[in-house]
Length: 388
Image 1: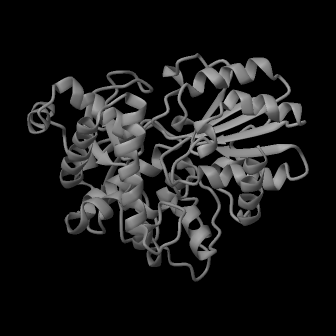
Image 2: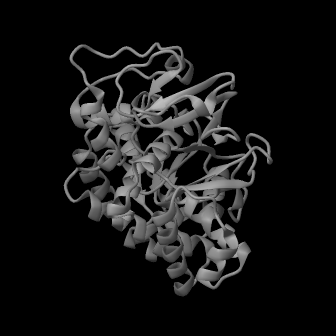
Image 3: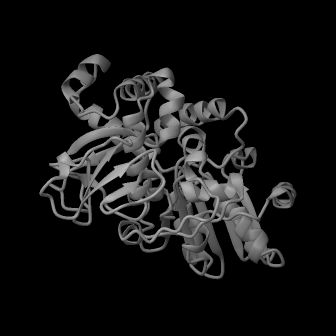
């Protein structure tokens, strides 16, 4: 345990606490067991280390990663037992999905040590409701995604803007600071600004994240063999070159030489890993799993990394809108336009986009790229990145 403590102390010294992600203040840190999921690379590790450094520096806390070689010969539960005997109160476990039977041991920690707070993070593929043991009554779960445009401005350019709700945006309440020109920064955000890591070698870093999710996280979680993992990469390649598209499951199944049901399962796993987003209709209820209408890559940065010179700006715009809006809203397909949220209809386009498609539709808006200011029911695309 001393080795784990030394590694933790070193990480804590290197943790910068000047910028906090949006989820930092949304988590109720008083809970006995807290789970934080999200795609690789969005900052889950940094967030928990910041919390420890900010609020628990003088208390008995320990951070470990389940990927550590220590756990090749030691159980998490044994670590928790020893930690409590030494006066430990707060145990943080990163990358929990890399540990076999994680849910069983977390359940036992919760039941055996009522005085111990356990906070764990894991890949989005980690489905808490499908764990071997039921943690749903024990763990408060939170999901985090990448930087909003607002967070990107603050993190990379030291430009601080307030959070605006969807209603604020549609009611034209967004205030632009003097001499601030959002379009100076917005294209770079679309290409490189979604993940909170340095701009240098971002494509290489992002490709590594994609490969780890497809070759390690999903196969380990779903019990897949190597050949099935390769099919996941083939499927993502098909999606990257075609998005947004209405999926023809039969043709994809034929191309991958798998069953139709397998294609649907693969898409759901890749979605949970934070690599694609499936736009559904409301046949399953607003919060249900309706029929998939279109498949997008998860965020614009993935488009530029995976599609390379085939990145299409119309696709980039729709992907950005879908990605940013789904944090606080149920986004479904619109029969008349691109998206439907809370009785509002949205048509996405460039500066020259007209209103013909939304004529006669109540509560309909044209969302335009390449404009700074909103007028009437025409809203700048960049403003939808201010929601968190």
